Image (cartoon, rainbow, N blue to C red; front, side):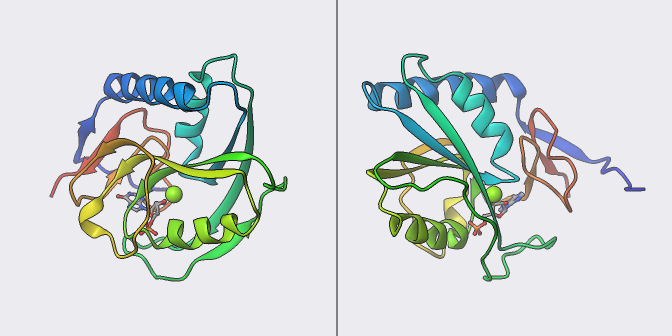
Length: 178
Ligand code: IMP
Ligand code: MG
Protein backbone atom coordinates (compact mmCIF):
# COMPACT_ATOMS: atom_id res chain seq x y z
CA UNK A 1 0.00 0.00 0.00
CA UNK A 2 1.13 3.51 -0.83
CA UNK A 3 1.57 5.91 2.08
CA UNK A 4 -0.30 9.13 1.39
CA UNK A 5 1.47 12.47 1.43
CA UNK A 6 0.00 14.46 4.32
CA UNK A 7 1.69 17.80 3.69
CA UNK A 8 0.14 18.77 0.35
CA UNK A 9 -0.62 22.40 -0.27
CA UNK A 10 -2.93 23.61 -3.03
CA UNK A 11 -1.09 25.81 -5.51
CA UNK A 12 -3.85 26.21 -8.15
CA UNK A 13 -7.48 25.46 -7.30
CA UNK A 14 -9.87 23.36 -9.35
CA UNK A 15 -11.91 26.46 -10.18
CA UNK A 16 -8.86 28.43 -11.36
CA UNK A 17 -7.87 25.52 -13.59
CA UNK A 18 -11.37 25.16 -15.05
CA UNK A 19 -11.59 28.88 -15.78
CA UNK A 20 -8.17 28.99 -17.39
CA UNK A 21 -8.91 25.94 -19.55
CA UNK A 22 -12.09 27.62 -20.84
CA UNK A 23 -10.13 30.74 -21.80
CA UNK A 24 -7.46 28.64 -23.55
CA UNK A 25 -10.16 26.71 -25.42
CA UNK A 26 -11.72 29.99 -26.58
CA UNK A 27 -8.35 31.23 -27.82
CA UNK A 28 -7.69 27.96 -29.67
CA UNK A 29 -11.23 28.02 -31.12
CA UNK A 30 -10.60 31.50 -32.53
CA UNK A 31 -7.23 30.47 -34.00
CA UNK A 32 -8.63 27.31 -35.62
CA UNK A 33 -11.95 28.70 -36.91
CA UNK A 34 -12.80 26.97 -40.21
CA UNK A 35 -10.21 24.21 -39.62
CA UNK A 36 -10.18 20.87 -37.89
CA UNK A 37 -7.94 20.08 -34.90
CA UNK A 38 -6.00 16.89 -34.31
CA UNK A 39 -5.05 16.81 -30.63
CA UNK A 40 -2.23 14.61 -29.44
CA UNK A 41 -2.14 13.76 -25.79
CA UNK A 42 1.19 12.92 -24.23
CA UNK A 43 0.30 10.14 -21.80
CA UNK A 44 -0.23 9.83 -19.01
CA UNK A 45 0.10 13.35 -17.64
CA UNK A 46 -1.70 15.16 -20.46
CA UNK A 47 -4.88 13.11 -20.31
CA UNK A 48 -6.91 15.13 -17.80
CA UNK A 49 -5.96 18.43 -19.42
CA UNK A 50 -6.68 17.25 -22.97
CA UNK A 51 -10.12 15.89 -22.16
CA UNK A 52 -11.14 19.11 -20.38
CA UNK A 53 -9.63 21.36 -23.03
CA UNK A 54 -11.21 19.47 -25.92
CA UNK A 55 -14.67 19.64 -24.30
CA UNK A 56 -14.55 23.43 -24.42
CA UNK A 57 -13.46 23.83 -28.05
CA UNK A 58 -16.19 25.47 -30.13
CA UNK A 59 -18.36 22.54 -31.36
CA UNK A 60 -18.28 23.92 -34.91
CA UNK A 61 -14.61 22.87 -35.04
CA UNK A 62 -14.21 19.10 -35.54
CA UNK A 63 -11.65 17.69 -33.08
CA UNK A 64 -9.95 14.30 -33.33
CA UNK A 65 -7.74 12.78 -30.64
CA UNK A 66 -4.71 10.53 -30.57
CA UNK A 67 -2.38 9.41 -27.80
CA UNK A 68 1.28 8.71 -27.42
CA UNK A 69 3.49 7.84 -24.54
CA UNK A 70 7.12 8.79 -24.15
CA UNK A 71 9.23 8.36 -21.11
CA UNK A 72 12.03 10.56 -19.89
CA UNK A 73 11.50 10.36 -16.18
CA UNK A 74 11.00 6.89 -14.74
CA UNK A 75 9.91 7.41 -11.18
CA UNK A 76 12.53 10.01 -10.34
CA UNK A 77 11.84 13.67 -9.81
CA UNK A 78 14.64 14.77 -12.09
CA UNK A 79 14.97 14.18 -15.82
CA UNK A 80 17.17 11.30 -16.92
CA UNK A 81 17.67 12.87 -20.35
CA UNK A 82 16.64 9.63 -22.01
CA UNK A 83 13.46 9.90 -24.08
CA UNK A 84 11.92 6.79 -25.55
CA UNK A 85 8.60 6.13 -27.31
CA UNK A 86 6.57 3.75 -25.21
CA UNK A 87 3.39 3.99 -27.32
CA UNK A 88 3.26 5.58 -30.76
CA UNK A 89 0.29 7.35 -32.37
CA UNK A 90 -2.43 5.32 -34.11
CA UNK A 91 -2.95 7.79 -36.97
CA UNK A 92 -0.61 9.48 -39.48
CA UNK A 93 -0.20 13.27 -39.13
CA UNK A 94 0.25 14.20 -42.77
CA UNK A 95 -1.75 17.32 -43.67
CA UNK A 96 -3.35 17.67 -40.21
CA UNK A 97 -3.46 20.71 -37.96
CA UNK A 98 -1.93 19.20 -34.86
CA UNK A 99 -1.87 20.45 -31.29
CA UNK A 100 0.29 18.52 -28.83
CA UNK A 101 -1.20 18.69 -25.34
CA UNK A 102 1.12 18.29 -22.36
CA UNK A 103 0.75 18.52 -18.61
CA UNK A 104 3.98 20.37 -17.87
CA UNK A 105 7.13 21.51 -19.60
CA UNK A 106 10.12 21.39 -17.37
CA UNK A 107 13.59 20.90 -18.91
CA UNK A 108 11.90 20.79 -22.33
CA UNK A 109 13.85 17.69 -23.32
CA UNK A 110 10.79 15.51 -23.85
CA UNK A 111 8.99 18.00 -26.07
CA UNK A 112 12.10 19.04 -27.96
CA UNK A 113 12.59 15.46 -29.02
CA UNK A 114 8.92 14.75 -29.60
CA UNK A 115 8.17 17.86 -31.67
CA UNK A 116 11.18 17.16 -33.87
CA UNK A 117 9.93 13.66 -34.49
CA UNK A 118 6.33 14.75 -35.18
CA UNK A 119 7.47 17.46 -37.61
CA UNK A 120 9.06 14.75 -39.75
CA UNK A 121 5.56 13.27 -40.22
CA UNK A 122 4.53 16.38 -42.20
CA UNK A 123 1.53 17.81 -40.36
CA UNK A 124 0.01 20.94 -41.99
CA UNK A 125 0.78 22.73 -38.70
CA UNK A 126 2.11 21.74 -35.30
CA UNK A 127 1.47 23.65 -32.09
CA UNK A 128 2.10 22.99 -28.44
CA UNK A 129 -0.32 23.54 -25.57
CA UNK A 130 0.71 22.92 -21.98
CA UNK A 131 -1.18 23.28 -18.73
CA UNK A 132 1.93 24.30 -16.79
CA UNK A 133 5.28 25.74 -17.72
CA UNK A 134 8.37 25.85 -15.48
CA UNK A 135 10.60 28.09 -17.63
CA UNK A 136 13.35 28.39 -14.99
CA UNK A 137 14.33 24.78 -15.59
CA UNK A 138 14.49 24.93 -19.38
CA UNK A 139 17.47 23.21 -21.02
CA UNK A 140 16.05 22.96 -24.55
CA UNK A 141 14.43 25.76 -26.50
CA UNK A 142 10.80 24.74 -27.00
CA UNK A 143 8.21 27.12 -28.45
CA UNK A 144 5.03 26.93 -26.38
CA UNK A 145 1.98 28.27 -28.23
CA UNK A 146 -0.62 28.00 -25.46
CA UNK A 147 0.18 27.99 -21.73
CA UNK A 148 -2.23 27.49 -18.83
CA UNK A 149 -0.03 28.73 -15.98
CA UNK A 150 3.62 29.64 -15.61
CA UNK A 151 4.86 28.32 -12.25
CA UNK A 152 8.05 28.57 -10.23
CA UNK A 153 10.45 25.69 -9.92
CA UNK A 154 8.53 23.38 -7.59
CA UNK A 155 7.52 19.76 -7.94
CA UNK A 156 3.75 19.63 -8.43
CA UNK A 157 1.06 16.94 -8.40
CA UNK A 158 -2.50 16.54 -9.62
CA UNK A 159 -4.39 17.27 -12.86
CA UNK A 160 -2.49 14.45 -14.50
CA UNK A 161 0.84 14.99 -12.79
CA UNK A 162 2.13 12.24 -10.59
CA UNK A 163 4.43 11.41 -7.76
CA UNK A 164 5.61 7.85 -8.34
CA UNK A 165 2.47 7.26 -10.49
CA UNK A 166 0.06 8.40 -7.78
CA UNK A 167 -1.98 11.59 -7.32
CA UNK A 168 -2.69 12.21 -11.02
CA UNK A 169 -6.40 12.23 -10.13
CA UNK A 170 -6.31 15.28 -7.82
CA UNK A 171 -8.62 17.95 -9.32
CA UNK A 172 -6.28 20.74 -8.22
CA UNK A 173 -2.53 21.32 -8.52
CA UNK A 174 -0.63 20.77 -5.31
CA UNK A 175 2.92 21.08 -4.04
CA UNK A 176 4.56 19.08 -1.31
CA UNK A 177 5.25 21.42 1.59
CA UNK A 178 8.84 21.21 2.76
P1 IMP B 1 10.87 17.67 -19.39
O1 IMP B 1 11.37 16.75 -20.46
O2 IMP B 1 11.92 17.91 -18.34
O3 IMP B 1 10.27 18.95 -19.90
O4 IMP B 1 9.80 16.85 -18.57
C1 IMP B 1 8.51 16.82 -18.88
C2 IMP B 1 7.79 15.72 -18.11
O5 IMP B 1 8.31 15.51 -16.80
C3 IMP B 1 6.38 16.17 -17.90
O6 IMP B 1 5.58 15.82 -19.00
C4 IMP B 1 5.99 15.44 -16.63
O7 IMP B 1 5.54 14.16 -16.94
C5 IMP B 1 7.29 15.35 -15.85
N1 IMP B 1 7.37 16.45 -14.85
C6 IMP B 1 8.11 17.57 -14.92
N2 IMP B 1 7.93 18.34 -13.83
C7 IMP B 1 7.03 17.70 -13.06
C8 IMP B 1 6.39 18.01 -11.80
O8 IMP B 1 6.61 19.06 -11.15
N3 IMP B 1 5.50 17.10 -11.34
C9 IMP B 1 5.20 15.96 -12.01
N4 IMP B 1 5.76 15.63 -13.17
C10 IMP B 1 6.67 16.49 -13.70
MG1 MG C 1 3.98 14.76 -19.41
